[in-house]
Length: 378
Image 1: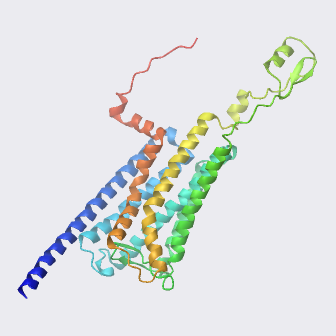
Image 2 (image 1 turned 180 degrees about the vertical axis):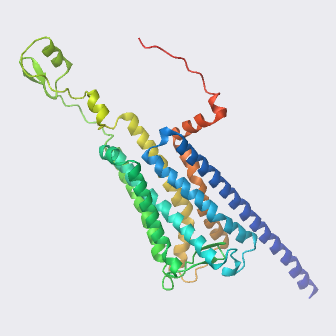
Image 3 (image 1 turned 120 degrees about the horizontal axis):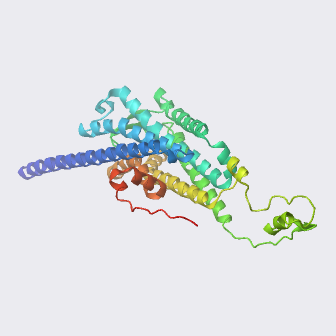
């Protein structure tokens, strides 16, 4: 009896120490994620608003992503930290804001998650249009169109997040996740399957669009053999696809009295170029590819960081009473939290233009730049 009592007394403090250490690790990591998300998204949003050269359609979408992630970090993460610090109890009574606050926090979490998914899908479509149909993209993509796309993404995400507020499904405090979220139960006992299927379908469709864009770029990189087309001559006035600059020189010199040679193929007139841009030049093509690569990496990070949690949700939906390890579930939830702070880092790493603009805005980097010397071209 003495040995068993001593064993029980030694196990109790060790479990308490383990729980305290786990809570401290959760609080520290979530505080770091919140700080990185708020600081990174606020800095990137300030850069996009301040620099006039970045006021372009793709960066309007990036600005909205920064706003959504910053709002998620400011609204959803502090109650989770309060729940972890308070010991997490059982049921809705452990949530620091009560039942109504629990529903509001869960609604905000689902709203921001689906908004990012819907907006990334819309961005993938615009990236394909910018590469494959640049003329249409240049004419139609303006600030009003971007605002309409962003409003549509917010409307769709709100439509996905509202039904559980009216008890279509359940928004409850999930003790194992330390957050208020959609309570994922078996498919016959809840309406949660439609939500996770919609999220998976949107992310999958986004990757399909990027694959289509990659196939288009790869298909148009193949060089075609040159085909020589003879010019048409009417009294030394050469014209047609095979005409060169010699045709205009011959006509000016007085050889032939035919009609004025038409506009030579391959030479843009200054008025037409300034008034109506039609061609996607090499520098613009590289810029569109660079922006597309940045947004695809943001989409890929969204998939990788949310995949463990979505997998756990599918397991609980299709397998009744499926045991999900607590360590795995905690790591999956915290990875989904980390997605709120990943976008600014990915944007700066994969977009050279953003790095140059940020370096130009920093006072410590302005004076460190190598002085340039003016050259005259003779």
